[in-house]
Length: 255
Image (tube, rainbow, N blue to C red; front, side, top):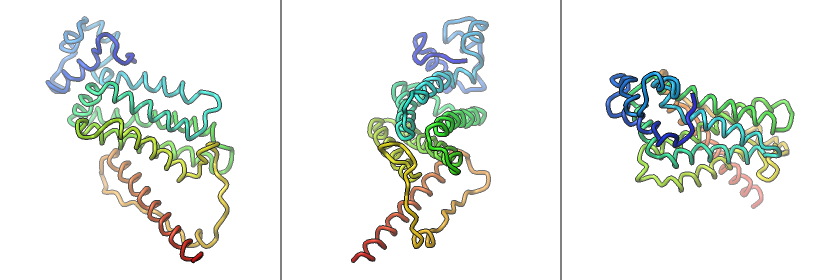
């Protein structure tokens, strides 16, 4: 069940704070209803369950993101950049709520699972958008799936960096850095920044022959969110290193 951000005196933030302060399992629906100023029946009808109210604004964000991505003529890079900014800046705008939820999730495994499922919903929206925005070719589906997944992983990494210490980590600077990283990500996937289309890159037999796969080793049973961040970071570092080596070889050959 969705609640518009900031609705009813921001009772969503009040409820999340209560759950974080008293403990998720120790807090009853009656206590939440009293804190939000409604009866138990009204609470269920208006807000849903305890779990629903923790993630209430995600439903609204998903609707807004879907509307954004449905804009005609939106290029892949513009859609991804504007999409992640929409979600990231929502958290900055409702910082108290975002930080309270972050602390609550650290202690409740079921809520972390719900958050992971919500991330998949964002991925599916980006996938659907990219499948329509990318040119039709044999790699279209793979590019859409992998780029959407990488986009959400990068966003989540920046968001968690801010959530760990909002006072020390400037939100506006992170938002700018996130925008730049999405631009780099699109370039790494062969998207032209101007037209937002898959760039036509001429084949380079020598470079192709010397290319090496990127292997990421993850510990069995690792937290899925941390694993996604580690994978994105490892791929990024490997691609940056490979690009530097390729540039060095090119400069050496032309010297």
